[in-house]
Amino acid sequence: MSDPAWVPRSCTLPTEERPLRVAEWDELFAEQLTAISRPGPLRLYLELTGEPGVAKRLQDLAEREGGCCSFFTFTITPGENLIGLDIAVDRQHAAVLDSLAARAAAGERP
Image (cartoon, rainbow, N blue to C red; front, top):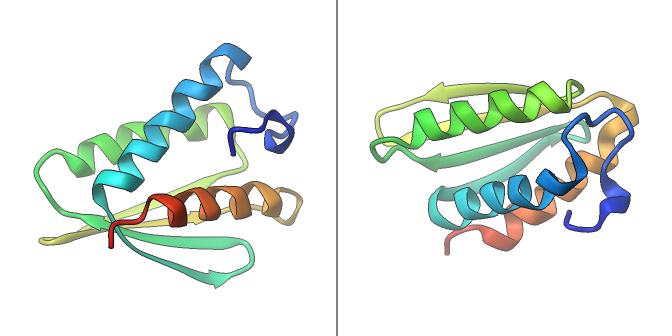
């Protein structure tokens, strides 16, 4: 995901800001991610800890990501102990979702 080749042309985030955004996702995955599943080739489901502030942080990051990469659909389901994040893309952007899934798997908590 740090390789610029995976970024689709439809992304409007300035090039110099992309490594910072990737780092934000990496940090969130490393600190809060507890489970990953792929309900389908165009969907990724993540479970994150429900610690204080995580839902707000996740909402902010998802809104900013959706603002520059409008092909993402983020659905956040807050819970008492876990927060669910469902991420969907269209067929054209399946490779981007694959990259995000690999990135999440690399940072998942044991």
